[in-house]
Length: 148
Image (cartoon, rainbow, N blue to C red; front, side, top):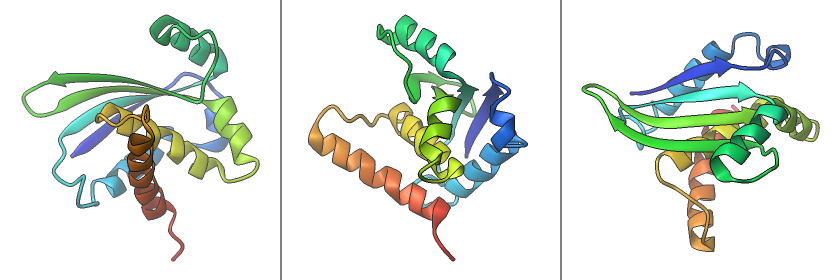
């Protein structure tokens, strides 16, 4: 089973999501129902933060002096029952700005799913890898946001 720990680092997230931990618990529960994720034993953390912290993290860990939408920090640490796979950080300002032309929850899901795929080994350095990663991300997004 996949599990996410949510860390709220910026109060602005509460304007859009009343209970971030419950939101991600529901999303992860749905993800766990997809056949390709059913047998995964993974745990990761999601930091809901702002542009200032994203810029600091990006400079410290990626040597880039700019803010960004999402950062992933893969870590494969094996425990008895779970495997901790790493951390994801997401910028409120960027999700909120993009949601003006879309939907806040769709944009948030795009960010954390993108970060999650980085944690499990996907990247987009080459075009074929980008296409493969995007296809998988879109499958999950469509599952979350399909029209009934």
